[in-house]
Structure formats: C-alpha cells, structure tokens
Image (cartoon, rainbow, N blue to C red; front, side):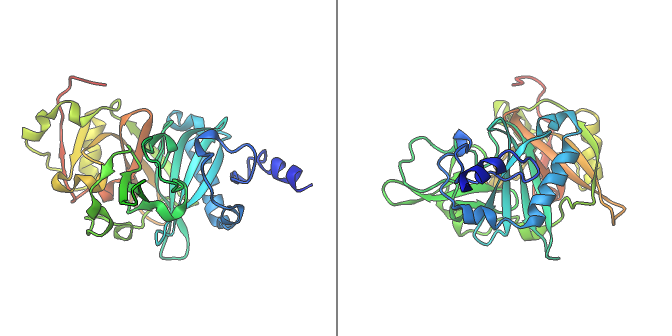
Length: 305
C-alpha cells in the first residue's frame, strides 16, 4: 500500500518533490542518500515559491523547458538556510533555483538558471573522487551568494573544495577566508507576489578566457544597474572580473543579458545578470552581487563559442 502511495506521489506535478526513497529517482541523482524524512521536512513555503516561480519563468522561451517540470528540492547547508531546486524533465535536469531564507521569516529565489548541468549537478563532480562522501548530502553543499561548492574528503582523507558550477578544485582557504560577498549582503530575491519584467538576451554564451584582450582594456564606467542594462540593451556582451577575488564568483563571468522583476512593494525592479559560457549552464545572479565588487569589460568580438 505504501509503495503505491509513493509511486503515485512521483506523478503528482503539484507536489514537485521527488523523494530519494522512490524507485524512479533520476539517474543523475541516484547517489543521493538523504533520507525521505529530510525531504518531507521541506517547508511548504519553499515548495509553493518554487512552483510559483516556475510557472512565471516558463512563459518565456528561455525557460520554456520548465513547463510541467518536476522538482527535486535539496537543502543547502549547514548555516545556509537555503535550498537548491533541481528542475527536471523526463528525469533529466533542465535548470535550477536557489531559494534562501529571508530576515522576515520568509523565502526568496536568490538565483536561478537553465541548462543540462545546473549547479551541484553530479555531472560536474570529478570522476576521480573515490571518497564515499555523498555529493547530495546537504552537509557538503555550500553556497555563499555567488560561489557554490562542495566541501568533501578525498580518498586520502584530505578536505577538498570543488566548484559546483564547473567541477574545478578550489584553494583550501575557501572554507575559512572571508569572501567579498555573502548571502547576508543582500537578501533581495523573488517573492511570490513579484512579476517578471523584461528579459534581455544580449548575446550567446561565450568563454571570457578564450580571448584575454579585455584584460589590457579599460574597464567600463558602470556604477549601477541602469548603467549595466544600458550596455546590454545595445546587445553588447560583457565580462565581469573581480580580479584576485574571481574565485568567489567562479569568474571571470560572461555577462550575456539580464532579467528584470517587478517588485510589488517597490518602485525599483530587481535585476538579475545572465551569465554563462555555454547553454549547458546559464545562471541568473542578482546584479547587486556584482556591482562594486569588480569591473566590467567589453571583450573582443571574435573567437565565439
């Protein structure tokens, strides 16, 4: 009887949660060992916010794959007070949301994206890691507002840190050094009553490292969201570099557009920068996380990927 109930739960789109105790867990997440109880403890407000946000995003062609998707919600932690939401179509990832607790005892979507290899995808986990550490255990998934990473132990018992956006190994000091930006710097995010506004796709994804001439160019004089949007409205692609702090942003970042959200109780829009080196992973990060933390450059227009 219980087995039939669990199987039925996987077919109810409105629940949007796939428990790892079920038999049809997507292959990419089959190694997850979180208990069913952990999934059942996902707050109802988090589920509802995820559903509301997906229904709004899916109206745009950029996010059309989100329509009628199922969600796998996993806690981030510890101390993050947030969740990673894997968006699935036919058991394959097509995007993600990051939902963070706010100071008002609510939740907000503080990052989202599209692609087949979202943040914390097992496809990004190094194949040579022989540790028994479960990559989907919330104890090992960290997020500081821009940098997502695993903190795990390798087969020799050494603690290592892996960038969850690309699989690169990070320096050891990432676990104790002060990052230039944290989740607490800005808890602005998408609330259930907010509505999507303009989506500007300025260029296709590109790799800032494929042509480094921008390193010897002068940075743009961009001091606010309006200035950045003005550049992108010209269909100019940009590079964001935090220079010596690039590690904290998985940077340098290719800025290829933006998405604005109309905030119900504010005259100002919430703006997310569109960034990514390929369509396999497009991230939307709040512009406020970047402004004042680095410089913007116009890259050369050749060597596109």
